[in-house]
Image (cartoon, rainbow, N blue to C red; front, top):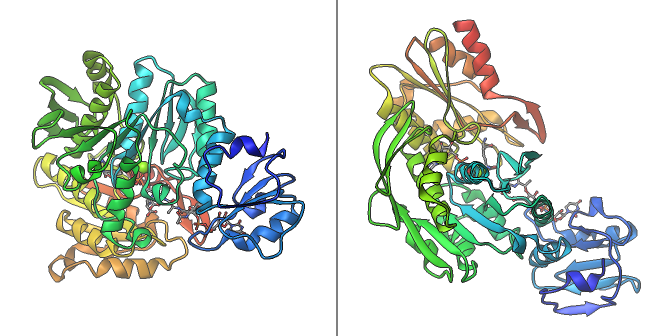
Length: 485
Ligand SMILES: CC(=O)N[C@H]1[C@@H](OP(=O)(O)OP(=O)(O)OC[C@H]2O[C@@H](n3ccc(=O)[nH]c3=O)[C@H](O)[C@@H]2O)O[C@H](CO)[C@@H](O)[C@@H]1O[C@H](C)C(=O)N[C@@H](C)C(=O)N[C@H](CCC(=O)O)C(=O)O
Ligand SMILES: Nc1ncnc2c1ncn2[C@@H]1O[C@H](COP(=O)(O)OP(=O)(O)OP(=O)(O)O)[C@@H](O)[C@H]1O
Ligand SMILES: N[C@H](CCC[C@H](N)C(=O)O)C(=O)O
Ligand SMILES: [Mg+2]
């Protein structure tokens, strides 16, 4: 491919060398550069790609996209100076893959919690309605039936556009993708054309990255600010910041809510372990998902399907038969009737939602035992809050590990313990080995008791010092349920 062809739409500040040359691949990691590649020097959170420019030229890079041109330039290399290399990467990745997002309807879902649930339900719904469909999500990416493993909630622009290109080649009409706040700030979605955007909610998370809650709100809002006029922007009016998200969007503004007037509305009639009974836009429907927070997710899905001009009855019929995403409020029962719930709750709001749902639908005096940890190298300020919420809403809590990454697991647990009030102290226990923690919860449980394993959901690993060891909450719970009966 010619360099000129992929530069369409890129604002060049300075050009040194020729743009009329053949290129091989676009690369932003020096370790992956080969002959005739374009290297993007990106300033990241840990290092600066500009430090690797010379190495990539030695490895064969013939084009460098950067924010500052090195003092000594190589006459055989083309240097392109831009304001933000990651923005150029987004645009050039889209051009390189022939702008696949223009050729299907791409819907982005953003918010602290619920993105995977909403995107997965939309993927399943549109597949059931007979459309070829794509999914880009935390759990996995999917092109019709083909599963492509996911590494991030929102992948980098090269992976993103290559997935979208494969979806176009597979004749997909729709793609539903999660848009994380990291992706917005790092310009991973630059150069994509969205047909719609959906907002779920915004609560405490990722303050390690965004530093303040205001910055976090701004990052999410930025996604809606950049939607085109032809798109729709669907927001949750019951969220305090739901309206803020749409303040400056050019897209057509639409809303959903349970507690006030909105374009799409619902009322929870009943919430039990077997599902949700909702009045949704005046239709009486039973859904398999559990928990009133899922009423919001279902309503967001329903609203999106209506905005994409699907038939109401077909949508509600298909939706009522669907199960949610893996590791979200998944529950299993032991033979002596201990209930185990595996859930990906890893923010204070999610923990509270799941535990309040359990409190709402438990029958009597059963104990609720929560096993919970907090991620290493992630927002430290949510640790005491998550422990506090877990203690306030459970009878017993076992504080444990959840991907300590490069941190000491005992230090993370100590930080969680700071949120346990003196009155809650008697409820809390700390066991850093997550398998031991789950085992202990199973031994403490009596028939009828409910064990919540929070934070890991679908994850099949425990990440310690950069190594992902096989670990599966569900596998261990099933093993222990066999032992306790
Ligand atoms: C904090 C964060 O988001 N980091 C992402 C970011 O890396 P970074 O900014 O730290 O990059 P860096 O290491 O400083 O390097 C800067 C540049 O130098 C380059 N480099 C670096 C070293 C070298 O030898 N050669 C070289 O060329 C790098 O390729 C990069 O281009 O850009 C990388 C490439 O796209 C991502 O893989 C990486 O994700 C890390 C692994 C990560 O854990 N991210 C998480 C926090 C994340 O993105 N999460 C969100 C939301 C999760 C959710 O709540 O759902 C997600 O969308 O997944
Ligand atoms: N609408 C919602 N409101 C509040 N909490 C929710 C909602 N939907 C799901 N949750 C809780 O959040 C957890 C994560 O849900 P989900 O995976 O759908 O969110 P996500 O936004 O994709 O998360 P991530 O940022 O990790 O990708 C669930 O396991 C549940 O505990
Ligand atoms: N995508 C989120 C998920 C966190 C899940 C939890 N298991 C953890 O490791 O903290 C993140 O990377 O912050
Ligand atoms: Mg997700």
